[in-house]
Image (cartoon, rainbow, N blue to C red; front, top):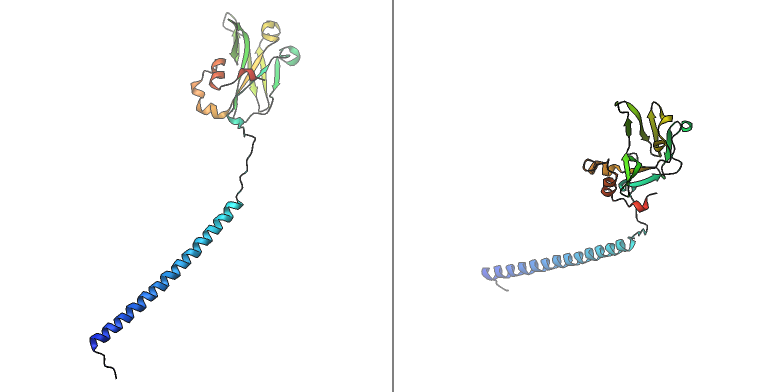
Length: 204
């Protein structure tokens, strides 16, 4: 028969309790570590699959947004205003423009110091008494521009203004019209060309 003193019994029970507690804690932590390892491996595996399934599409052709590019087209062949065409010329565009674009029309009115002189349209001329003699005006669509003369006696207007005329059409994208329109003197052809960085050697 073994007799345990109360104090020894308490020590024995406490030691057994703490032993079981630490054993249980170790098991739980060990399982957590194993679980974390499994989760980490699973995430790494998914990441590898995702990277392998991703592809990069490389397009060697650059995308050109014509809605931000200003262009100039020159018309210098058979530009004659006469009775047979109703003093009205329909000039087609090389390609359709955007509905938000605006156009500027300039007429070559002469040469000064070796430089072409371009006058913005509409353009109006008056008699000495201040009454209308004749003028040019235009309207346009996405596909063409109509330039026409107006006045009371167009048949007798000097051929200097009716035959072998040269016009340039500047296409101003709507983007520029909103951001820089108030800062540009549109009546000055050279200022417009400079503002929109147009290379005149590439004018069509």
